[in-house]
Amino acid sequence: MTTVSVSIDGRQLDVPYDARVLDIAREQGITIPTMCEHEHLKPYGVCRVCLVEMRQGRRKKLVPACVYTFREPVEIFTDSEWVRETRKWILAFMLARSPREKSNSGHGGGARRGRAARQAQGNRRGQP
Amino acid sequence: MEESCGKCTPCREGVRHLYDILTDISGGRGREGDVELLESMSRAIMDGSICGLGQTAPVPLLSTIRYFRDEFDAHIRDKKCPAGVCKELVTYWIVEEKCPGCSLCLRVCPTDSIIGSKKVAHKILTENCIHCGACEDVCKFGAVVHG
Image 1 (tube, rainbow over the protein chains, first blue to last red):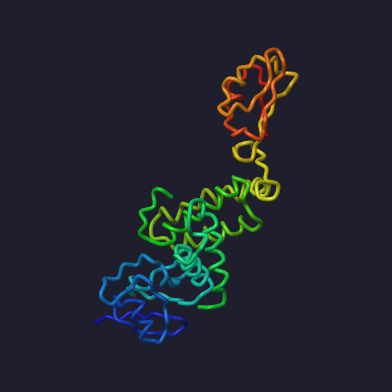
Image 2 (tube, rainbow over the protein chains, first blue to last red):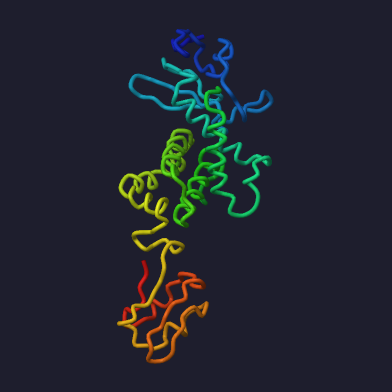
């Protein structure tokens, strides 16, 4: 089996070709939050909660850990400032839809919902 | 917003939030810090979306913020639309000197918010005016103005 030399949060690893970032991270004891991922479902990569930062040379982008697989030597950062900031917004968008969000009900609640999202984001500041 | 397929969260939810906040700003309900909020939200939407729709949807918004920041501030702080475009923030009035009292606007007003009699300059009652602009469109003398 071919392996790829990669790094996750600074740890140098040789991982099997096409291994999922999420699986490797779990093996390493690194927690990546997930939402749409489930053991009985195929990875779909749509909730964007499991986004991690992928760097390859000067190129960097956010990729979903549940569908991104290692095929070339890349560096993965599961908890960078960029990842945290984006993830927080995505969770805030989901929270704004929650039935407990009072401002969510009725017409014209939209913009207040946006602010609710900001608030939800603020409340979670500093927590992974 | 209407074109989002709804597959991924940032595009489906985020772009809607951008739209709602923007609508609030253009309606005079914007708050301090909303521009920064839009910018930070846009960043997350662009970085987090799967396809080109979510990745580019906030681009025009960011461009308008970059080049027309003062207009955003005018809407939020002064509740004014300098360009006279945001219906909810403009007021209409009649320049008396220009109005010959033809009663055309009076007849076309959907809310009967214009008072006056023939040959006497008319007046717009701002309380009932819905800012539709029908009077301005119909006036042949350019007596109806808004801002």
